Image (cartoon, rainbow, N blue to C red; front, side):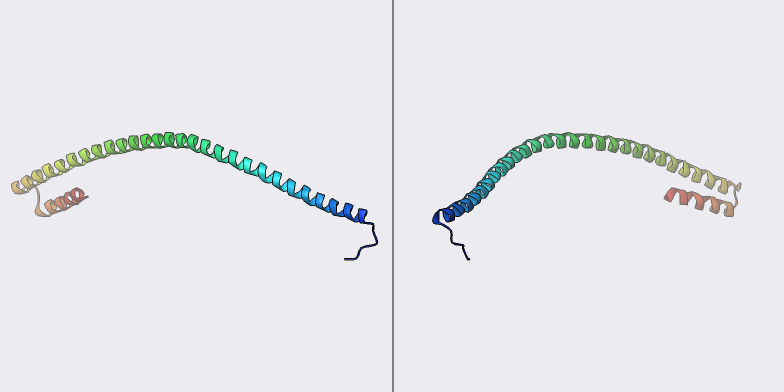
Amino acid sequence: MSFKKVSNGNLMKKKWKRIGSILFVVLAVVMLMEKWSSHLEREDEMTVEMSENEKGYADAFYQRLCSRMESRYMADLSEMRKECGRLETRNQEIDDIFLSLYSDKAKGVLTEQRFMKLTVAMEQEQEV
């Protein structure tokens, strides 16, 4: 580094000027860090508050969801019971028809071929 011949006073002023600007930057950084840390603390507090509020919302949502699922389950269960009753009734009707067909075949009213066609069709319906 080459310096011009400068008096000791001017050299000291330049050094203090540099030190002052460095100190200014350091102080500014420290102040920003303090501000940032206080901001983070407030943000953490808000997060805790929000998470408690969100927990309440989540619980309410869960309760509504459970309620809806239960009502849909009950509706589906009711429909399944109706369908099961309808199928049991139809099964009984088919059994009664078999008895009637057998008695018609035994009386000679129905041919063997016709009896077989009807019974096969009804057995297929009963299996489904």
